[in-house]
Length: 224
Image 1 (cartoon, rainbow, N blue to C red):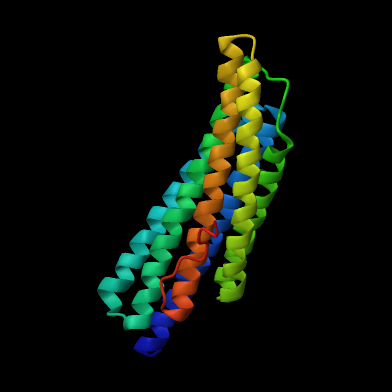
Image 2 (image 1 turned 90 degrees about the vertical axis):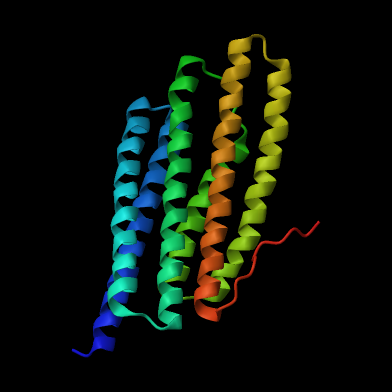
């Protein structure tokens, strides 16, 4: 096997590890959303264990990235692929952190249930999960067009968040006790975690664009 063939094999293995990490994060996010929807404390605890696995996976991949840089003396495009990989795994780990944040509100809502859940919260969860799945497909296929589509989807996430924020502020104003105010605020915390997932998925999309074009660009610009 030539030096080049060996390097490409290692790079392909690295990409496979990133895709596996993406699946782990997607599973963690879905578990957190299930725990939130069902107010299931047991599932919420499982999210923490899932997050620890995601974190270990991130560090394992990072070590492989450093090893490739040190031992293979990669060319410019190869180095771009490795640095892109390192950025993507950081964003994936952060998505896992946001999922854990969603799960953390479950015991608080169990202790003080609230009567009103903005329907946009469910829609946000479904959309960001879909976005995460799509961005990993874009990475696997090196599909720049699909990566850019995520910017429009993130606008939808932001719009959902704005509506959730308004509704929760109204509910907090009408709350009969401090406990109810605090519990209602937990819904806003969950929404903020999901809004951040949309941002992080968009970041991954930007890295895919960079990988394929060599251009660092913001794919979700303020259209106001």
